[in-house]
Image 1 (cartoon, rainbow, N blue to C red):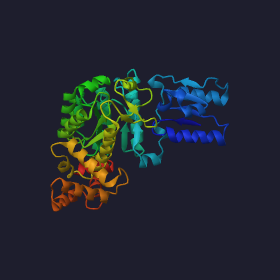
Image 2: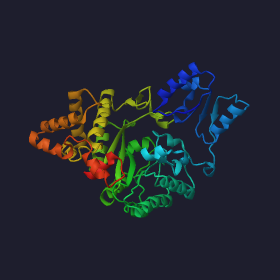
Image 3: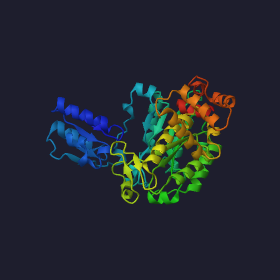
Image 4: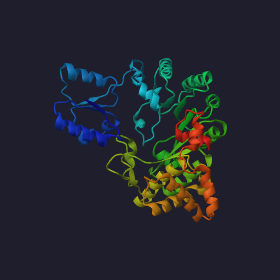
Length: 437
């Protein structure tokens, strides 16, 4: 049995492997995936397994399976993955079932790897990005579309690295939209924020609402922090490009920030957050730094007193500039931001909550709601809406006005706006709420 092991499933998979080794000790266990490709010797799951493939598994895993099944059985436990030429990798999309296509967003990749070296990311270990043959890839997309696939998420780390390829892929979706506007498609791409040439802008501008989402990694607006983690980014150009996308396209924008990076204190993060809020992306993904195994971020551990949770997902607990209590406030802020702002359920209310000091005001709300509820999860939407009304009253808005403001967004029917938008869009419900606001 082979297991792909990731930061999000390692604990569950460890329990499964432990159970298998007790009830079926003759079963051969092979592990692979990013979580076990680094620092593997210290991991319980690796100690229990029979074999481990580190890195690329496209060639090494089937070769290992053949040797296990047909002999001679390999003597070495750890097998370093061999990276094959991209043209020799058989694309796996035919393995998506009809049920997958009907009910899931399909994950696809036009390339692997990343040329950038951001130290918090496993892609920092890549030498470059490697593209698949574009004609073959588009043929696979065509086959998926013919089977009914309409929701696509590209996992490429740098979709807009090669503009010619980006334009060909976008044209594929534009052709489908033009051929049948009543049968829309939806595509998600990850963009480098400071690289948006005119040719790409022209293509992006052709997409209708609800067809396109961009995930854009800002991570930090602090140049000193960016330099510390080897992130090269033109902040002014990145901000201009986000502003252009908001003003001149229908793309849904999901922009990332990371709290807990070395060298960044609360005040610096707050300034970056406020700067991003002013650009008005649809969602700000407020992430807390994770220590992924193998990433170079650990070189800052001693100097910046970085303390990480020893259990997955290895979240930062404190740094020399943000103590544990402050970091927990940021964790709660991130959760409430997701519930209130990113959810799209309070699109008209959020402006009144943020005022002219978004980070400061939402942190005050975060502290207040946690004090009232002692919870960050399992807060029913009715209760959350009532709490938002109460919060607005504490900020000097009378009850009638506060209730009317929240009622614009929420009147007890959870997906009313999303349902209206869904009639003409193929976007997921959360994105549809933002577009309908």
